[in-house]
Length: 430
Image 1 (cartoon, rainbow, N blue to C red):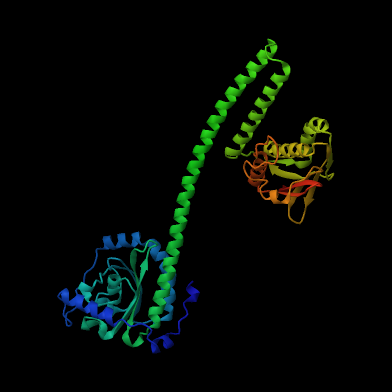
Image 2: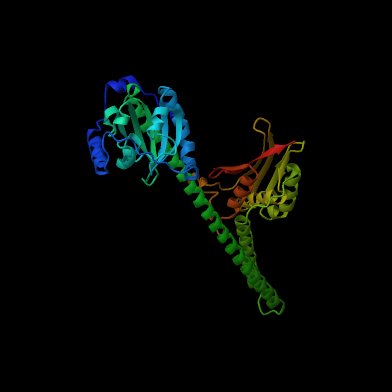
């Protein structure tokens, strides 16, 4: 933004694009109304050191954003008898770059109040009154004492339009031109933009804090409800088994009830895993061993579904730093999904690869099921989205969250009538 402050000040001085005659006239009328006369000396009014310190503290953010612009402006104007100034909305100068001793004696100094009723028409004080940029050159000042000086200033606003203060320049009249006004206008706009971004960022942070607190409330409520529902399910399950033993309920109906109880219990487990914050116990594990364990665990279910599992791995172990239980849960979910996708049986090929170039381990789960239509692929990891009858839509969302929490990635490729392939990427370790 500062790089953009490139003005041809000589060209600007030839072409006065601004006319402040009306603003100057009205300012003079205010000065006369305040009892000032042209030959009066400036009425020097200052704030105490304590008050100035407090003003600086309250405007520190404004100073931080304005200072780079002020330094750039100072480098572009005459170095002697020139100052770049910041004042607040009460016309108190609280920051200054440069020195102009004679000007300081007239009241243009840090800690001084530059209101029109003190020192007459002046760029900073008049700018605050009219809330617009202005240039006051030589005898446009109401008090004759300022005849040899020239000032330009532009107001600085908050996002809601409130005036915060003004940025200005004062130089000897012979060194002044309207290019300087262009510089302060551009700088003030840049400062306003940065203040606006900071305000938006602060609002976003506040919103995120509220959202986090809201999410915590939801998680706690969900956890409580899950606990209560599971207690009820345990009671239902116990009574069903008791009725079975007493031969009040036939085996077929009892099995159906227990199957549904188990399904709801699993849904609650998945939901609880999804809502609770990750508490990972990261340790170095061999993916070869984790995959062998999970495949061995799922073999019985695969055989019942007439699914042949092929596990293809390098001879050398591929190590990752993961939470063992969480990663095994992902593998189990993907294998279960593949088995369910192959209703008439098929082949699930699991491949483990190590990509040296990208520094990740690749774990592929490729089935020969019906495949997923292309228009559904972008939704596959969304919460509660499912294409399975009786599915909860939680499993793949849970998988994605777990992999993401391990700085990994999971993606899907699918073709209807051919099958589906899920690919997991996890950073490997030596």
